[in-house]
Length: 92
Image 1 (tube, rainbow, N blue to C red):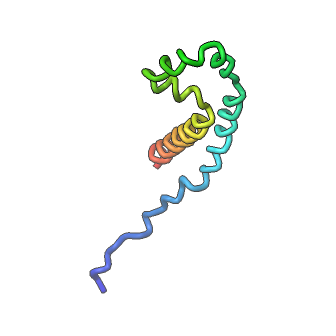
Image 2 (tube, rainbow, N blue to C red):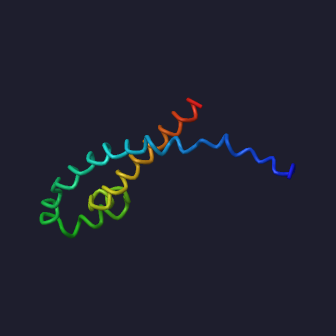
């Protein structure tokens, strides 16, 4: 019986769970990004555009913004989570 000296009471780290509704506000920010129409450029130079986009991966990513929105949302949620984690560690 005396072998069980596992100290389980000092595990109150479900603290980050209550403040987690905070990531919800940053999510609406990236939503206005997709409506920006950048397609009128294509008809003028359909053949030269693929050559220009090929060297830069960032330019290709900017082309389809629907793929960028989840990345931006995940990034913001990650940043908020990091800030909350740092706040919890600093407060502890």
